[in-house]
Length: 160
Image 1 (tube, one colour):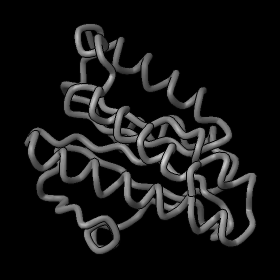
Image 2 (cartoon, rainbow, N blue to C red):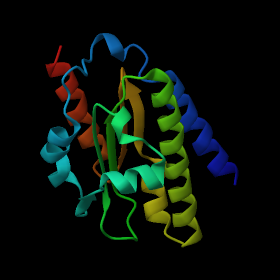
Image 3 (cartoon, helix red, strand yellow):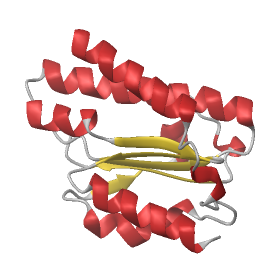
Image 4 (tube, rainbow, N blue to C red):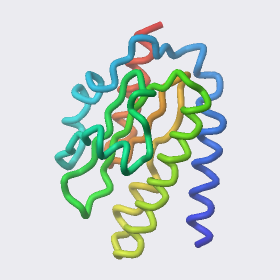
């Protein structure tokens, strides 16, 4: 329980702070989440399924009409935590709501994996890359999270 509280506090701090200082060097204008996902999907260890709009709305409580660009993908294997979420939301208030929704889903996933005695997958969730750059929110849960995040940084730097 203490570890879960620690994870939640860390996630809250990451999203509250965003990527401090990074907003000057990264540009999210014109960023296409689907195209970026297509470019990195081969880096995942599992086959990911892109979630449909209805699932995103029902599971996360996110109104996709508020999003400028998005992709929500998760492993087709129910025993895998591998997930990539990228979305742009220009409305700061809505973005804050949606960040909380994603945080809750990630926390719930970590709990489920621990309860089902899958410590390796729970560790992937704990070590995920989560944050915000300008109007872009990202969650990368993967054994290749560092490489995918590096590709994201390069993409956003190239837009400067």
